[in-house]
Image (cartoon, rainbow, N blue to C red; front, side, top):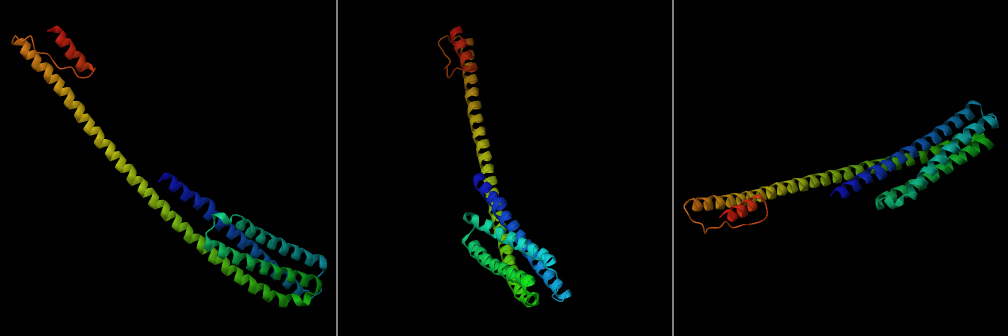
Length: 231
């Protein structure tokens, strides 16, 4: 029971929380890429297409770095597929496909911003649509992790209750056994003392043939042996 509870808690800590945190990191990276895309297009519009290549390169590199972080997070999650359920794997693969599509759109926008700025605003609409679908999948995955974590906690709680019940039963059984053993020992001691007492009465009455039955080697038995030797 305890091993099962520890296994469930390990799953919650090292799988569910890990996947939940990774999904948040992927969401943050994709959001950064989207913000960078907006910033690049705004710069193009404000400069009426005459933005310097050096200045635009700064936005492009920031967008590309965010996409790289996003895809790396997804790859890392897939590398731990052994700990995922079949349902998680399906959703994660859909998430990867959409992330690749979003990353490709960001790359096209970055290329347009550098080489053909007038096409960048129209490209932004496609990037935005891919990002919206990606966010929807991320929200589904986060909800899925919450649900699985809740199930794991419920399982751990049920296991803890069963372990508590088993321990309570074991304690009650141990107490009952202790009481039974105590009563048996008490009965044996009282019977031995009673036998010595009756032998002493017979000795007082002049019966020198009566002997006390010796059982065991404890103090009572030694007293009985001493009494027999006295007669």
